[in-house]
Image: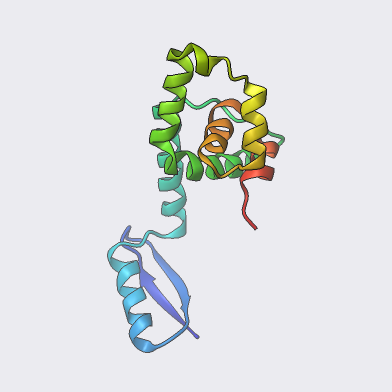
Length: 143
């Protein structure tokens, strides 16, 4: 284990702790300096990507008891919504256009989503229908 002072690709300086072979450490240092962002810039970039996806998919605003809870729920929703983006758009379109699909109640979708929160139907439910941060966190967090 060793600590290294590096300059991230964003230009900020920081200290990182690395383990392993010297060649692996050198590879990681090069990655940080060429493409890695400092923790603060990475956080800002993640917020921008989350905002963009929420706007693109027209996702509802998440409500919670604290900004920290809302931010965490947004990050979990971003991961699942981003990975199932095309499928979510298709489900939303089908629910709007298809009378038979529209007969499926939100309660039926909710039941399926709770059973398999990381499935396509779970992604749809926790992205479009559920706005409570606590419920999103309880169902999408992975231990």
